[in-house]
Length: 175
Image (cartoon, rainbow, N blue to C red):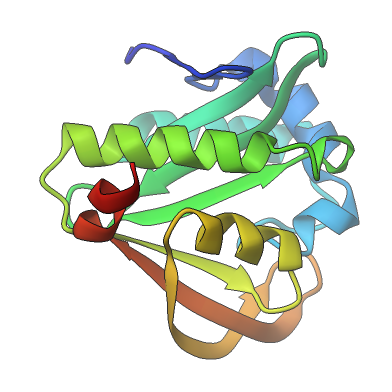
């Protein structure tokens, strides 16, 4: 099992089956799941356990976000599609929004993935109405490459979506 990544306030570590109930509780909030393409609503512990098993077997770098003093798992961050078509994804439980945790976690994972691979870029996306996610991505150097309609599993419909990318050269200039 790959080691955890420690930041100033967070511990990014592999997800464990013991996280399924907490993960489901955080993701079962429609204000969280509506911004995620693949997460349905409602979301139960069995779905969370299947997600954890899937990420453990996939060629991806996925980490649970722990914030000491916050009661454990507060979200998930990761890059899948490795080693060629890297796609960043992340979410936080609603109680942990607007506290800088998202930026801190994404910065750490992007830095780790660029340091550990020869990737030239990492892709990401955000639903257009998700101002918080867009702010995190642009703050870290991601820029918009396109717009399209994309499905949200939680709302069972399509919403305007932004495609973004971060090139290694841009990351190295600010990292």
